[in-house]
Image (tube, rainbow, N blue to C red):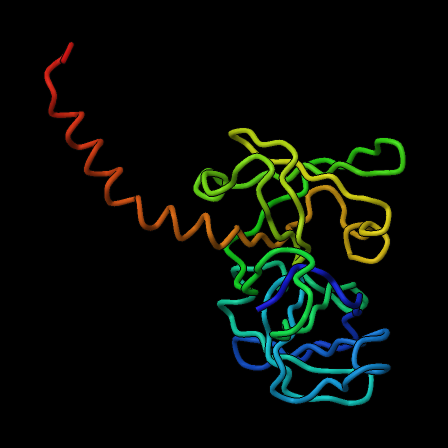
Length: 214
């Protein structure tokens, strides 16, 4: 479990092919160096995707990625030198600074536009209708593991506002228009949608059987 508050910006240092998957090595700047060391078996969110640490070498740690993860996230797009957002898993007694994030990427979106407004930035992300239908205006969304608030929403995509601090300490300023970004939808919204979906289908079925003008 995570909060969507990025704690370090790592860099991909090495990529090893392993069957249908890969093992990549990430160099951390601060995380695990000044505080509690990173340990084998620990869960760390990489661009919002929860991965297990399988090797540790000082400021480097390695994670294995299977084909499913590579296909469903933007981690398969990463290359040596690419920055990656890192967050350690949430402690029970820790401050919940963002929102509840599971580290399970639901889909990828595409960065369609970046606009500067004063010192801030507005990002427009396009996504599939099945993804957008789970979003609400002013609701929470995790983009590459960053907890953000939906500032605008339409049938083709949504927008978020980025303050200078978030812009500088995350990978957002390294993205180009057209890049894929990982999206994790708000967990509460997904549960509600799942619970009401059968009843919505039943209601639609009943309405279709009603005579015209009823």
